[in-house]
Image 1 (cartoon, rainbow, N blue to C red):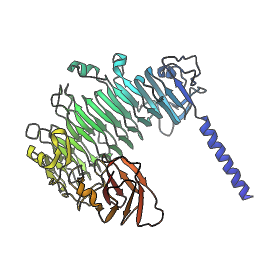
Image 2 (tube, helix red, strand yellow):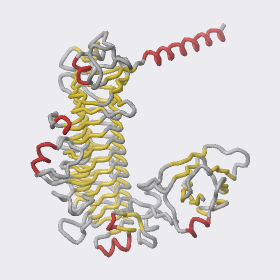
Image 3 (cartoon, rainbow, N blue to C red):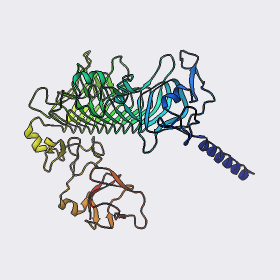
Image 4 (spheres, one colour):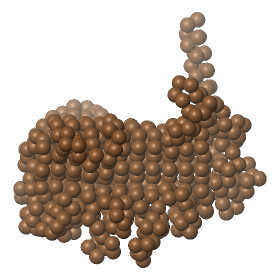
Length: 541
């Protein structure tokens, strides 16, 4: 009897899962051939995303009664009976999709708005107010396509005091640009036509792998438990990224080319805590901040790197960042408590000119309250000025230092050169497990100082096939590589850029020797890394 009951429960569960997957639908929107008289199917698409919202074709939920009061207001259906439901997807085709606005739009499951493969849907902007559980994927925002008639921010997620909170937003793989090419822009053009990128008010949101070009401010997160990862912010006149909350992870973003066209003090990453909120447990990791790529760039200004000027800031981790700025403020914390600044490279492209050289600074809050219990380890910087525990930091503040330390600073390559004084100069016990490129630390006896771990790619080092007690054979290798020694799975094979190519999760046969098929790899140098911190290099031929 119990067996039959269990089987029945399993059948019902699988049936419900099937119904759930079947019930999620796709609707298509095509400005070129669509019509709002159509049903939104693949062959009969609607016309524009703006009209889909204006015609109330999306069933969602809003708070009632208003004003929104936690514990009293409840979610009630909005646009009941509309064709698009929670969990559905709106697929956009090429063309102009307009300005999108909705207020009071909390979904039980994510509604996805995505570009159809091979298509470039272009929007002026999207504003989601009192909204939760939306995904925006692969969309293009271009103000110039709309004669700069936008709301001033391409994507604005508004936490509304009357209508309710926002959050649980995913923005991935979008392109946001005021204009494709701003080469001929004047100062007035920048001030009048540069649109800001993404502003999210609310918790639990993800902004990843987007490209923002020729903009005012880049990405601002005012909320908790969010992630800003892998974004490219290129040519901007405001601040790059603003984390304004707690438990925010800002990682692996590139922010470059600041345009000084107004009185704003531009920062790569800036946080300011004006009301004494608890901005805590934020991580700023593996970001690249570059003041300028072209010394002849018009309206080139002095960019501040990571600026946290109005604390308190508690339990922040700032590590593995490359910061190249023509200013004193490389990394600056005013009013910091239990914060860690570890393995950053902070460089001034003109170290012998004012302003600069770029520093790491931890100092009192502006009200005079001292910073406490912070640590600063393993950093390369033009100056170290900290009211904190610090060790194993190195000061590089002249062009001759740059020649001695870096591969090619004139070309913007701040990886360590062979025999750099930063090699093996750090503390192992406090360093991140990998560097800014994902290279395992340490490669030698000790970790290196700064954001980059030196990897010896000379033929002698590669062909020795030995690292931390491992042995690799044959090396060079054509088809199968054998690894012996103290092995901890999984093993990661990475290319020279730090990208994971292959993961070895299990071993058949002998546990002390791993056979790795590499015939499918292109010729070149590869890294092999283990979860126990061991690493080695091999040459594929």
